[in-house]
Length: 364
Image 1 (cartoon, one colour):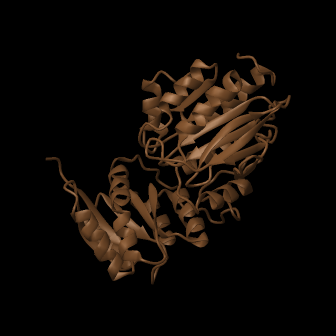
Image 2 (cartoon, one colour; image 1 turned 30 degrees about the horizontal axis):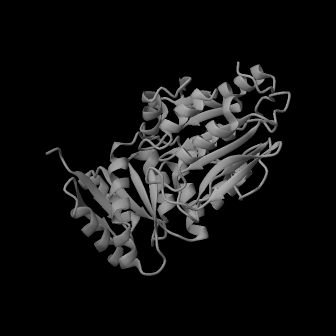
């Protein structure tokens, strides 16, 4: 059998450390090789044990988990899975952690921690497995004075080029999972304010997508919000599927509207990219542009092929720029990709395609 994934657990709660250690050690392909009560203890443990993955709490004594993560990703990048309490502040801090380079996160319950973590055991161990295989981003050295509210190490923003004639028919559909919060941000911040509507399914649990949308809204030139059932889909706006609900786009007279509904998970996910992309093929056809970003699994691959067959133009993120090359690989294998591009080229290529279409409904 291949070597086990070696994990260090960092959490100030002795109970959580014990529970996570038990969950990890029950897996045949991983082991908990150490547990630290705060980042300073963790620093020595990482130096001495050289783990493959660490799980990291946010609120801890002596050093905040976010401060520790920032230092770790600059000096010794390694796969990190955040274990964050499901609160509004927990959501904001978790998004900051993903921005700093954490691979993924687990939302631990505020009460009933023992039963809650046991129910999350499969999710926790799956995310550790994914993290162990993820491609990491090394953070640049901390700037002397970072722009207020801007992401760490970000270059000064340049105004995205205008598309010109505003299109009310074109819609951009984005699907993403692991690593996708930052990949989606990279695409959206580079779209001009006159971009067509963008509709997004990012695999996230309830309670996190509202904070994610609000954070993007402060960074982008288009408006970004959680999608609401029945609202009109408008140019210059991006709509994010609420965690725990499916998002699709339907036609209502001359308008497109968002349909936000509960339902069974699709491809084990809710929201599911498959649901969104199927609606794109069914409702928007050649006026759709599809984008598949980093993520584990195959969610959305078949539906993206349906989009292509219905006349859409699809961009898929390449392996080198993905945190996890799962969903993009499956989309390519399904024959769904019109082009495979590095993340940095996706927004410029979208703008190029939209300009060439002249805001009209026909393909170019």
